Image 1 (tube, rainbow, N blue to C red):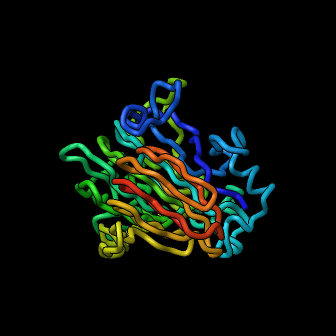
Image 2 (image 1 turned 120 degrees about the horizontal axis):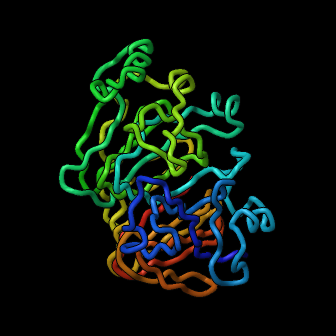
Length: 321
């Protein structure tokens, strides 16, 4: 039986990134910026690597291939790929205004799956905001005109951001993370993004970064967001912890766990469990041993492992499919 493993994330140094993930979340990289840390990833553009134990140095994807997809759980059987990608994102500057396609469009045009995602706000500077859909419904023709004449920002829905906010972003929802925001993102395992506005910035090659206007027009829902801001569920008290359902959909379910003491959980056969430590320190205890946990670390627990205990004072992001 495979036991829990810690994961080393690939790190991306996009031009808008900062250094908080290195300074506050112990993300290790020689890159000057750490815009994103992919704390659970089996994507071709960046793979989680196992740290310690019998699989030390191997990618999580290679171990899944060796152990068999049973370690992902029964719910993952409906996907022919690893279903989720989880990131920590540090936006020192504004991200581009962008949109993601759904599965049907992405499979035809990009050869991978679409992208529905959710953002949990870890921290933010005073006055920080993000773009979330439109203020009102507009036509596709107006959207094209506003992209071409640089007036798009006049009609987007800009939302103030606070620590603990939750934004659910269906494929087709126009969005952009604003500067001064640190967040955790749970998403479909896809890296397809259509950029429609980028503040006139130049990329590392000194040229304007590419826009994807025609594809964006194909997939953008030109309307206000369909979901309210905030977690899907209310805090629920259990022995040793408080659980809050943040978001659930056909692709993933994730909740925050505020542990104070010792809390018992189970990895049943329905799904693997991803734990990302958002704050604090503690210990994970399971049938084959235990491991220390600290802020910024990511743990993969195979489906069917059975009971485990999280002890300490921590906030964690728990994701299942």
